Figure 1 (cartoon, rainbow, N blue to C red):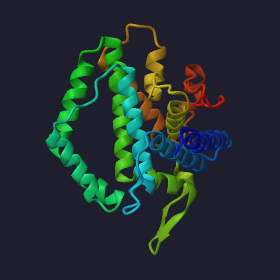
Figure 2 (cartoon, one colour; figure 1 turned 30 degrees about the vertical axis):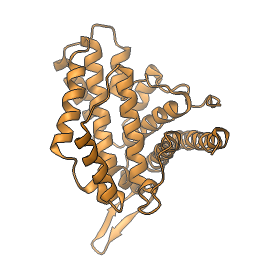
Figure 3 (cartoon, rainbow, N blue to C red; figure 1 turned 90 degrees about the vertical axis):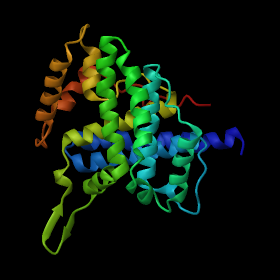
Figure 4 (tube, rainbow, N blue to C red; figure 1 turned 120 degrees about the vertical axis):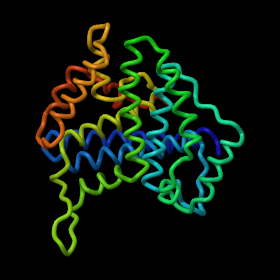
Length: 279
């Protein structure tokens, strides 16, 4: 397939991501957090499809893993993780040939993505990734190290939510009422502004990376705040208190405006809506 033919689907995916994000922001402003969150997650998933296409990942027509919602969510999260490593100049994790064979065998043996996700990665693989990444983070200068740890923690939680299906469940929760013979199980009104804002934030980062190759933007609201603060940054204990305050103001308060207030001061999003640069 020629490059020109491959580029047109990618441009269409990017435009659709931008449309979904714009609609999500309008709905969030109108007070419809559930629909806004679900549309943002759909944009995030669409970006994952675009990243798979851009990286020329072959479709597995027998297992249909590539078309799974969870697969696309996780693909997007993993690309964001790689871009975070690029932001700080971290070297990618290196595996022995035997370790790589284990990873390939585990993926090839799964008939569905849920089956693949249900089996935890071997301790050996996780320890290799953890040691190689965090050894490099520890070597960064103080301010960079603090922000990098905040961003890495945010992306780690996102990747885990994608892997275990929590993101897909949240997407469905934002659209549908769920109940059984015992009564109501979930309602779109239970989705908070903070959840919607978080996924709009994540979707915009994914689209900026896909459309423009922008890897240096902050990867969480707290990281964006830290980047805007005077340097040097406070010690880690003070950062921990700030994290608790963010969680306290956001958790259990569906009408909290904490994230939206911070958004205008930090301006983290541009240029998600500009003309597509990939030609």
